[in-house]
Length: 577
Image 1 (cartoon, rainbow, N blue to C red):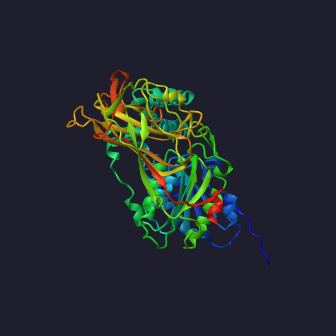
Image 2: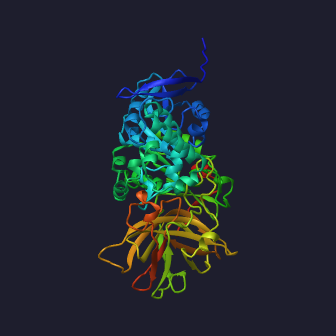
Image 3: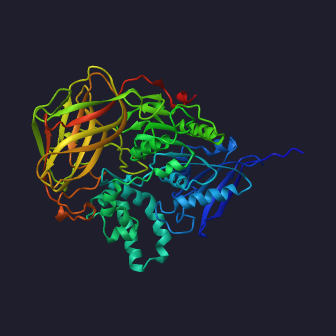
């Protein structure tokens, strides 16, 4: 007799962890009686919500089920339906490994598991990989990073303030407080509720709170006590947590966005994964970088429309193709690297990362002419006054502003208001004589001095069009302390602006902005030596900042210039065939 199978849902299943905590899990089974591979997502954002589980995760459940995969979505520990206490990142490695072990014992599973999802859901994959559990064949972390200090909460030693607070306000705080509410003393319960309501009514007021870290915010989100601890922030800058990647042989499909808050960590993760394999041998890892930002994975970034091909419409199929290959232990047919280049708004394929045959081109700062060029600069300096109580406002870039569900302020935006300020110094090059492709890490090496013991140095690369309009392309920050040995003498600093892919067209000009704040994306440095997260308004002081140029002080912008023509297509999927 012929029996017809249908897709089944096993709803609200309890999956036990090794310590007895049960995590609520939904399981979709394909129309087959045979054991099948499992695609697992572990999320803190409510497993029943399509936005969190599917929309931003680059996987269409119905298509995956039709291809013979089981799909499993689980609330992480202490979130929504799951038991236990929630502390971000803390138990995701062991809980991920326990869940994979449980799945492999179920009759519907053939022993092979892959994981998928974006942002923190990407972090749950990477942390599970750290346990190297048997049966985990592949992960597809999207718009995420492997380190959860620098590249997640901090950048160049500064705090990603707007992202962290919005993450608490929009995503983590409400459910976490609900889980804890019955255990809190009455007074603390009401204070935490009132603070969350206030923050949700006006997130921008939340950014202005001083000090950033106080008892009230800790009552609402206890993990902030560790994240915003000044010693922890300082210790993160030289800590490498990626060595464990080398222990696993699981395949990685790493997906990032040039305008995403996590792009630096995304690329770092791929480079570490890629290093597991010798050149020329079997290499299952793949990298895809689109133009996307964290709250805005679409074809509009900032004030630029990048064309229909810039959307994420191709990612679900590319993810499934990758899983097909990984679970069959074969190398994907797609190129190792596929990246979207703005300016031309085209997709490109490359055999490796960093791109082979790229060269570093330095543009020299001239403080006497406020210019960028290839010729030696005159010995000169340019100065400005930095007032952290009147900081330079965030204007585009890889930001989380104004929040996950909006994201309209990230990417390239007009810089006229920023460049009109007297605490922003700009250096502008001559019109380009030919097209220039810049793909890779943009850096600046600057000779500087400050009257402050500690301050921030920010740098932004801009494109100036024929109409004189300036658009921000990429920016970075360095939290800096003056060397006691140097006194007031100039010191050389290195600022990582970040990774980009951009075709700068003939006739446009390059511009470098230098300032000492970028708020509220980054927290404000009080410049008094008081730890920034503990500083009150009375601790903030003004400082004189100075930039130097000349033979003795060769301040420069360093660009990774592509010298090879790589395969080009109008869509991501066209490069994958």
